[in-house]
Each structure stands twice: as structure tokens, then as C-alpha cells.
Amino acid sequence: MEPALSVHKVPPSDATGNGPSYSPGELRRIPVPQHRFAALKSNWLALYEPLTKELALQVRMNLKQRAVELRCSPQTPDRTALQRGYEFMQAFLLGFAVEDAIALIRFDDLRIDSFEVQDVRRLQGDHLSRAIGRIAGTGGRTKFAIENACRVRIVLAGSKVHILGGHMQVRLARDAICSLILGTPPGKTYEKLRRVSARLRERF
Image (cartoon, rainbow, N blue to C red; front, side):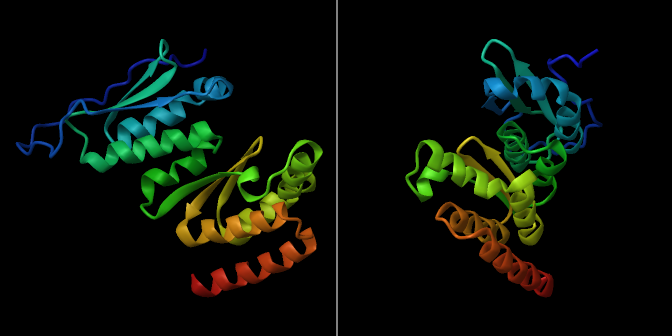
């Protein structure tokens, strides 16, 4: 049986006498795209557990508005928990796997950069399809190469590109993707990625 999309409140904790520095009940609403509703339903438990247990947020699926609602509870540690929960859920709804999106809860230096292929170069029809194909590569090979070299995660959603990672890593991945969109041969891109990967290994 699939888990119900309903309110999951955090259990009450012992009173400490120290109230939160924000208003419990503060709410954020994240609209659910039609094409992600089934994925949300099947991953609901994996999503709500870190939101309620790690961030102490209250979570509800508003079926009427087709949106996920996150609310601060009296046990929520601080206001940043609500923002991190919002970013985590938004990342999943953009297409990132739960295990990748959850990094936004646990690490402070991550972000998502989103852009359209047409933002880089005005393309239509077959030209646009070929550009998207160059980013993915045969069997996803090019996309995986960029992810591994730059230490990021990438989602291709039609003509939209979403990149999850640290600031520098996202910039390097975006540069590689833009080069492919502009027509740089994959061989040159792979060579540049090898240099990028070596540079990141030296730095970290």
C-alpha cells in the first residue's frame, strides 16, 4: 500500500524553557508539477522522514492546491530549517533523487543552478534536440562524465538543465555544458573534464 499524503507532525519534546526565535507555524508552500506527482507519492516516506526528524518540521500534502506545505513546529531548531526543507523538497520536485537532494539539508555550501538550453544559444527543433543529446551523450555517458569530474548532480528536464553542487563545482559543470551547447566536440570536452577532475583532486 502506498503511503498516504497527509500531515505528519513531529512528536512533542521535553520543554526546555527556551522558545524559538521565530514564529512556530511559519509556512512555506511548494507547488508540485503534474509530472512529479507520482514520484512524490512513491517517495513520500523517504521525503518526510528527514523533514520531520532532522529538521523538526511539520509536513502536509495539500491535495486541493497540489502543493507540499512545510511548517515550523515548536521543536524546529531555527528558521534556517524551514529554508533547508524547502530547498530539499524543491530539488526533488526538479528531478533529483532523494539521496542527492538530501545533501541540501546536511551541507550548507550547496546550491542548485537552473537554466534553459536556449539561454545559452537560440535553438529550435532538431538543433535543440541535438544540443540536448550532446549534453546527455550516448547512454548518458557525457552527463555522467561531467557529474563525476565536477562532483555535481545534473538533471535534464526537456530543455532545462539543473545542477546541484558546491559553488565552484556548479560553475565548472555549467561551463562544460555550455561548451557542448555551443558545439564544442565531446572529445575536447572530455579532455577539459579530465583536467578539471585532476585540479579538484589536488584542491580537495
